[in-house]
Length: 287
Ligand SMILES: Nc1ncnc2c1ncn2[C@@H]1O[C@H](COP(=O)(O)OP(=O)(O)OP(=O)(O)O)[C@@H](O)[C@H]1O
Image (cartoon, rainbow, N blue to C red; front, side, top):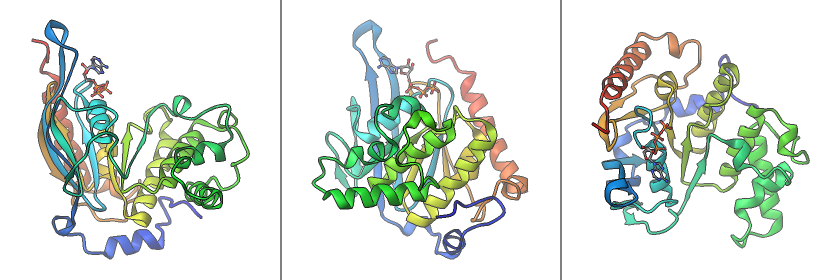
C-alpha cells in the first residue's frame, strides 16, 4: 500500500477531511482521572505526576508536550498499565482499568531496544499476537497487512539490524498496528531519527490515523510535530505535572509538511505551545 506523501494526500485522508469532525460527539475511549504517580517513598520520593485528568475520544489524535522530565513517559506508562498509578485511575470505555490496559499498544522511542534482533521482522511483528489464541494463518495475515501498511511489505524475512533506523521504527509501528489496538500510545517515536525520515514517518502516521480511525496519543518534545499531527495539544506543567492547557488544533486535514506548516494558523499555534513550554521550563520543580 502506498504511503501518503506531502504532495499526494490519499483518498482516505481526503475522506477523513470531509468526515464530521465534531470530536465532542464521539465516545470517550480512554480517560485519565486525577492520575498521580509517585516513585519511591519517604525523603527519596519523587512525585512525577501531580494530578492529571483528560479524555481521549474515538479517533482523536492527541499530542502531549511538556518540559523535560515533567513526567510524560510516566504518564504513558500509567495509561498503558505498565505502571500502577499512586492515585486516580485510567478508564477504558468508561470502565476502570486494572493491570494492563485493554486495547492499548505502545511504541517507544528506542526501536533498537524494543525489537528483538535475533528474530526476523515478521516474527517481531507477530510477537505480541502470540498467546492471543489467533490461528497461525490469521497471525501471519495481520503481520503482512501491518508491514504493508507501513511500506515494508518486502522485509519480513530480514532481521531488524539489516534495516535503517527509520525502517526499524516502521517495524515497531507495524507491530503495534498488527495488534489492532483501539488506542495507540507513542513515546517520542521519532526523536532519534533525522529530520527527513522524521517528516516521512509523521506523514505515515497521518495516513494510518486517517485510514484506521484509531485514537492516537503521542508524546513529543517537538512543538511543530505536536501541532502538525494533533487534533488537540495537551501542554503539561513542570513536575509534579498537571494539565496546564489544552489547545484545539483547528487546522484542516489532510495536512502536508509544506502547506500546513506555512499556514498562519500553524505558526500561531506553535508559538502558543512554545510559550507555554518555555514558561514551565523556567520553574525548578525541586525548589
Ligand atoms: N523508575 C523511576 N524511579 C524514580 N524516579 C523516576 C523513575 N522514572 C522516572 N522518574 C523520575 O520521574 C520524573 C519524570 O520522569 P519521566 O521520564 O516520566 O519524564 P519525561 O517528561 O518523560 O522526561 P523527558 O522529557 O526527559 O523525556 C523525573 O524526575 C524522573 O527522574
